[in-house]
Length: 196
Image (tube, rainbow, N blue to C red; front, side, top):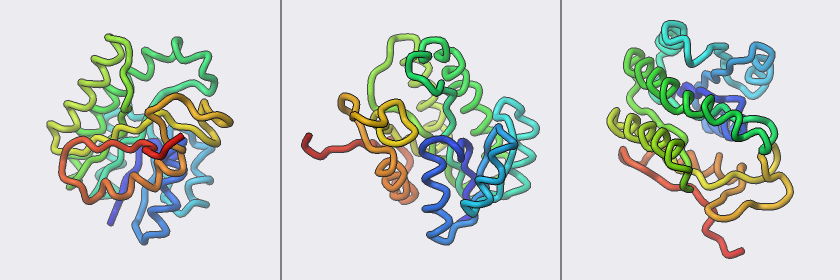
């Protein structure tokens, strides 16, 4: 399958790419950062350097690749959890305008399926409304929303100690994303249901 992953160098995307390549998929990995293109090549993906907020460039890149499946793993989060509040508007824009652009480009490229990242915990009212609209847009387009638990493990805000539930180790999150290829359109939840 031809799979276009936006957010390919994020904490889930960077783990998904080698899993997909190992399964024999042809992967295009999108990143905003040109210096991460080499990493994507090393992982076996064709790098696509593009900003999700440039709809024309995104549509051109996606159409040129011709994906069967588009994965939206984009967020705009800080490296330090202490900076979350100052990034809230940026991440909201990713969920609203970014999602709209992803869905438009996927439709223009003739993608058969869209899978988009979401969360399985409640946000404050304004943030929650944006997340809910993000999910509605994906569902309206016939896509699959994956509600991940809070991620923990290397490269996350919780590298040493797991956060409160709902949660999932980031490596498990990547592995558990693959079955979403076969689920019908709707919402699927990816959390750790093991006892503490």
